[in-house]
Amino acid sequence: MSLQDFKMTPEELKDDVIEMLKTIFDPEIPINIYELGLIYDISISDSGNVNINMTLTAPGCPVAQSFPGDIEAKVATVDGVNKVHVELVWDPPWTKDMMTEAAQLQLGMF
Image (cartoon, rainbow, N blue to C red; front, side):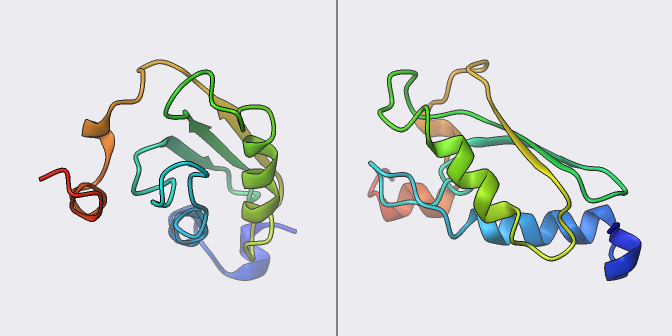
């Protein structure tokens, strides 16, 4: 199946993927991974293949091995998504400045 089967553009699918990412929470910080600033890039092909570059709050994070697969499985449930690949990247290193203002407010960082 392709995006045309769902009558969607890659941009529309990206919005749906972001909404799904907002339902996935960091296991150590009670903020979703999108608002936390862990998602660096989302690219979507016309055939609905989704590639996500993301990081973790620390390279030694205990879920570093399993978390990308968990995210792939959840994003794969979004209508219009064909295949999903999540790549962990460490550059640039994550800092609290990458969090949205709402996430910083939620954690009392203002």
